Image (tube, rainbow, N blue to C red; front, side):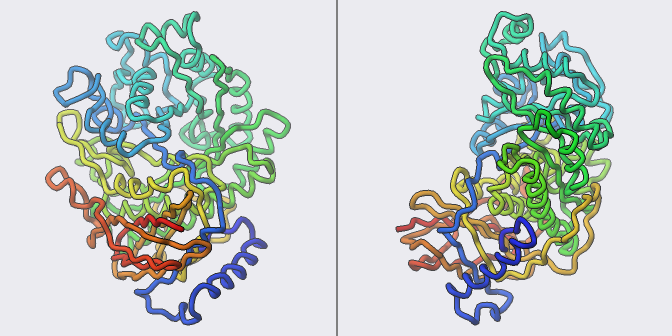
Length: 544
């Protein structure tokens, strides 16, 4: 798939240039090949931008069994733990590598008061989680516990401050608590909780989804709140807070204009957050091919959202000092039964081969648009929505790495490398041209054309990494990939694949869908491999 253009004029230029470059590297008969053959090109000498590790970041909210039972089981739990953190969760996430972890929400953030989660656990108040089920929150997992978890898995913390039900004073004090070295009442309170050293939290979200659960603000009101809160965001301990403003739900360009116009001449955000889920009314393990394609086709709109939102921000910020965040994304399946949610918690969601393919499509988009993005956070880390790990709740002793976990592992080699341009002869339909207002959360419209081959590539030194995703359930693809601007000497590959789109890793069969070695043939300026239906393949080539 060609990288999404930044504007219509550039689109026409790239289409013409792309066709010419493809024709120069491949025989003229390429575009008459059968549906099972895909001709592709990696332009290793045409750089896009660095693939920041932050594009593989994560999100954990006090929702269902994500935190309690998934991350935190308590120090007295029978489940093996490290000072209260679930041991297998820590091990798996440390192996995966989590660049940044966003917390405590989500909708929960704008009803969360951080002082409830500090001090001796037995003295913390019991509060009601009004956003997600009305259960009683004992606040045993608070700021110190969150930072401790980040340290265990090697992640940078990203805190979403309470705008909807909070105040600038509350956020300012939270920053002092986290970052002031010592000597103040709040830094001493942190030390009394076991953390004498400051947390040095850099990333701070000014509210969450202010257009919805964060307060139902208009764009100009949300910008005014940002301006107010930013005034009191202090650089305690020498840590200048990186402030993330609240952008729209999906590709709502009207929201972005209203937000940025209101901030004209005032403190600009360091980051700007967009949320874009890929919804479906289907149950996680009951997808038909048609329902799968309707969901997977939304990733064309995700790519369009990134391109158009970045283009609009550039009109206010031509030097790109404002980083574009996609800090909530992923598949959101709405067919979970009440009995499953009662047993496993709100928005619990099993992951299938279809979920892994969705992760691959999203991560390929981020690679292709690496120059436009600063951070992406998949929702959510454990048990909830498109999670990396499934546990069987507070009473269980087993955690399973999901298909989405393994998809992320296949993309890990891209981190820190430079994305390069790719082309395919795949028949993906173009994303809709209209994007003035994004739709709400709900079932995507059915599409008659299934999404086709997706790919991305990156390069660093003598290493070239290429990832292919075959989202079709009924087509086995043979990939013939020309390498432009580089000569390959050798290569290896890994595959994630199952012919059943509803295949998943269970507690009884935790390794049904996992990474395996795959065959790739390298001949100087060409690479060939097979891409079975419903598969992700990452090839790593050593170049001359």
